[in-house]
Length: 257
Image (cartoon, rainbow, N blue to C red):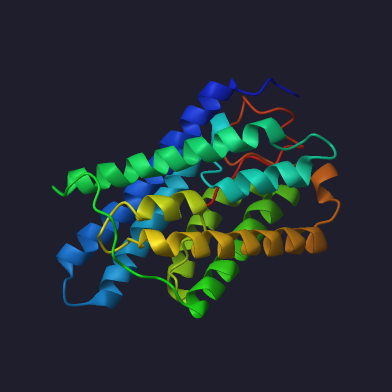
């Protein structure tokens, strides 16, 4: 059965809300971790990772039925690219508005996290994250994220997206030296807080470039492993999804950080 997609304005609102909540979870849990465990950086990272992974899974279930819960400009771009020939993904004209909504929502989420912990609304991060091993980590983290998101959709296992993507991001906090930002919108948002999860504004462009390269690698992996299944596999939505076109064919019912 095919149903009409939700109006673009509603989908953009869902993407802004979802990305904002994700940024709030990432930054807020980082602030809490630093305050609760000031002498143990490993425990701080664990607390930050667990809270982010759990929040991500819940956010997917919250906004997925409306917008597909991309929460990441690279996921939106990949969704269009994979579905462009059969018009089964995001429309090209909607990619830029999705990215803008995600970025604005992420920044708002960073401001909210700062305010919830009685900090100045915007506190520019001074945490320099400029190093080759960090950029390599962002390539790896983003490639894995894109591969997981679209492998699930193309193999008819999108119902597992919320738990699987949350688990991947939680694990990537530890197996990447960059702690797996893997999302340009969240990377930009994290520049707005001089706290545990922050990144200096000067470090942001290189991170975004590394993430873009990782997304391309992730897309190549999806094409290698699942070249044709988008047309044949019954992609079950992560949540009851009545607002996306052709649920058996679309690839929007999943998210990343």
